[in-house]
Length: 261
Length: 303
Image 1: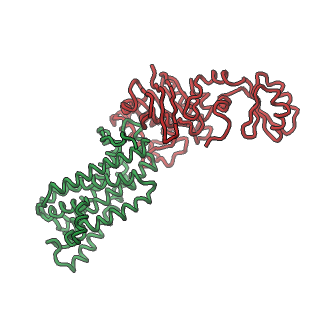
Image 2: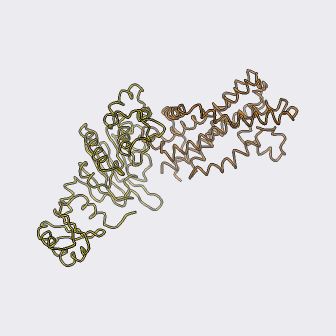
Image 3: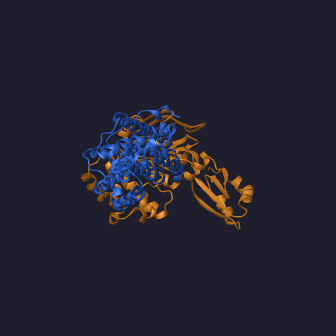
């Protein structure tokens, strides 16, 4: 491996053109894309929230549907960013060779990857916001503190965009992404406090969930949506920011190795 | 002035030296061809010149800027027609040009102003709103060429621009490329079509196994390496005819596949003798670039 692959990213504002390119594609399919992205989290949230929630007393000090709504904001952001960075990103990188075309213009791979990461985060931001709006419409959140969810969701999107781009850089084909979903995304979904409080888990497992980024997103979003100030804000933000920055850089190093050889 | 200058360029993958110390110079306004069999290192050379991969040794300057250090700035004045089509399948013809123009930092109004002329150039004036999937191979190639011109580049890289096209489409591309040369653009072309190189290139280099074997104007190379007359003989018994007569009657006699090539200064005795043979067909022609290519890069199959 070449030492130059590891150098820190150098960006130019041209990354915005990569973002705009993706937005132009998305605009053509915006409605079906939004509905498709929303259907799955909504079914889980409403089905489990009202169905299972009817049999439960309060969970985490709130009705189960409200508890689940906060988790779903985070998990749908995670899903949407992951799908965009992996399946769509892989199409553009490997199948359509869109990135190659862009790099023949005065853009570098650093710009392309930044554009992709910010784009995936933007798209997942819409998914997270859609769930937040539904929660608002259902009266599941009514605190002004919930506005702080907005930047947290975007940051969460960047985290999973970066991690997804790592997988894209490593992947020989679309099939490869299934491993990541099975081994990383699904466990995170189940262990990070989306469906039930993390403190229900055995102590040993809790120490593992503590290092998962989704846990920290949920730990911020849930209190904010219920109108409480979260504990340990700097820690949670630092973990999320750390994941976003490190995963982006790892993705960049791996993609340089793949495309600029 | 030189648009591109390459000296002692080297690039290896593992133990395999793909570019093994080449020197090149592109003068302003010329069409320069890089010819070579598959795997000769042509595409790698182009990628190195564009700053898309780092050399292991040597020096590249484009418009006086060092590459790869200042490749981004240099690419501002460059157009690229890649080997494989990478048009954006999600976009129409016009959107492809528009989005590509933005990558160069061009204002939206400036790009929109340039699009009609480029569509005209590509013969796609009526197809601006067509989806990419509905275009033929030739149309896609022409659009890729138009896309490479969106920034009004001074230097255009073309990596096998007519591979996979039918003869009509190929002639149309050649005509467009000559048109660009008349506008004073500099072209850097890779190809393994000898007629393409012979028609278009002012100068060319033949590359093999990472090295430049020879460099010069097409006519000059033919005169330097090949006897002026060639008789190709094929059909059952061609080999035997070569043993019995061809080898003696020509200055050089070679076999490629099942064809015998007789090289000579005076083809009359050979042609005369062949006219009396049954079952043999022949083609008498002047020497061309393909003869040079085969002589210098060998006649065995490359994969």
